Amino acid sequence: MKRLPPTDVSPKRTTSIPALMMAPCGMNCGVCGRHLRDRNPCLGCLAIDRRLNHCEVGIKVCAERNAGATFCFDCATYPCDRLRQLDLRYRTRYGMSMIENLDHIRDLGLERFMAVENTRWVCPSCGGPICVHDRHCYTCGAQYEHPGNKAG
Ligand SMILES: [Zn+2]
Image (spheres, rainbow, N blue to C red):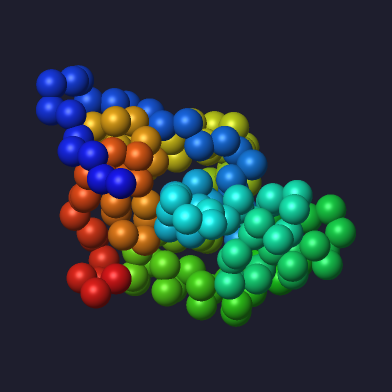
C-alpha cells in the first residue's frame, strides 16, 4: 500500500538499521529490496532461521566455512574474485560498494560504520530506510533518483 510522503515535516536525518543487518559480504541487508518488501520479506543474511533468508549471493555460506569470520575482511583471500565481481556489479548498477563498506567496518568499527550508514540511506520524508536496489522508500512510498543504470 502506497502512502504519499508528508510535506509539512522537517527532514529526517537518520534511520535505524541495526548492526545485525550487515552481511559478511558488506551488503547492508537493511536496504535490500528483498528485506524491505511487504510480502515474504528476507530477514537478512544473519537471520537465525535460514528459511527466512532469501539471498542469492551466497557469500554468507562461504563466510561460515572460515571459522570465526564475521566479515569477508577476516578472510585470507579478501577481497576474493567472487567478492570483487559482486562489488563491481553493485558499484555499476546500484552505486554502492561492498568492499568500501567492509573497509570502513574494519577501520571504523561496526558501531561507528552503522551510525554513518544510518544517515546514508534515510528517507528525508519519513526516516525509513531507502532501498539500494530501486531507491524506493517502502515505508512512505517516496521514490528517489537512482544514481546507477536507469534499468537498474
Ligand atoms: Zn519514506
